[in-house]
Length: 180
Image (cartoon, rainbow, N blue to C red; front, side, top):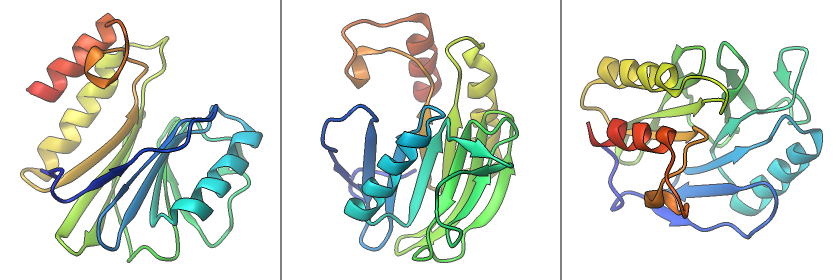
């Protein structure tokens, strides 16, 4: 389990495409929902310049010919089976290892100063049953056992815990998943 002692959360500037980044001594993670937008990809490139991440966890990327469009070819990328979540590793990342791909999630293992870390990108459409995505995440977590993990997901779920004024059914389901 990754604790806040291992990570420093950096709050991003407010703009229409929400991003967040997490930093360890040598490994920086950036999470962004690109909303299937070519323009948002330029936001990703700007955020990459300012945050200098090693790993980018994306949701709803703009896809052309089976690849995330608009990113440098030197960036490795892995997409889930439905192309909604993905993971990008920049050349600064030390040889990520592919673990698992499901319909709604993608998992890689990387080496950090604190040891191996599994990183997972996930997405659940607001129009789909969130339990499918949560079950996929549960399966990945079961497979990796007690190893450290970082999950970056856009689950389209509202909860007061993560800043919404209200809570919806999806938010309650995610809360239950996190507390299990």
